[in-house]
Length: 162
Image (cartoon, rainbow, N blue to C red; front, side, top):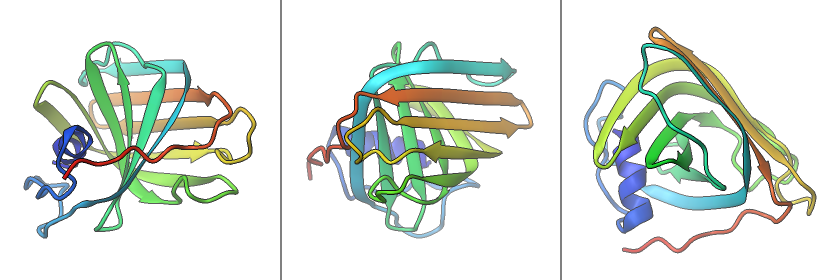
């Protein structure tokens, strides 16, 4: 699953193989770039019989994958949740959007990845002003949404351990 792949990359392996799932591609996918932005979570909502996440912390990550997918990872309260899809990335200075095709949630090494439809939007994170990142997705089991307000500093590029 992409969720396990990106968490593994954040912890220490940039060139991990994507685990096979209905949502993962059949080829090896690696993390091409990781960006993070700090600030505060302004909304967390989950409705339905879906994995529950507890909270949203002061940092959000975006992983750009070698297969063209992007993963926005929210962390908080011991859990991680992910919006997975394709579209603009945070390197773009004008802001943008990502079409969500799946979501995932997990604690520790256990993740559940679920097909979904939705959108993530983000303002220009390089403007030097407070910007927002927001995601919303609907799946057969329910609905997730989250919003984040940056501290006004541009995204940083954490070093991936190899």
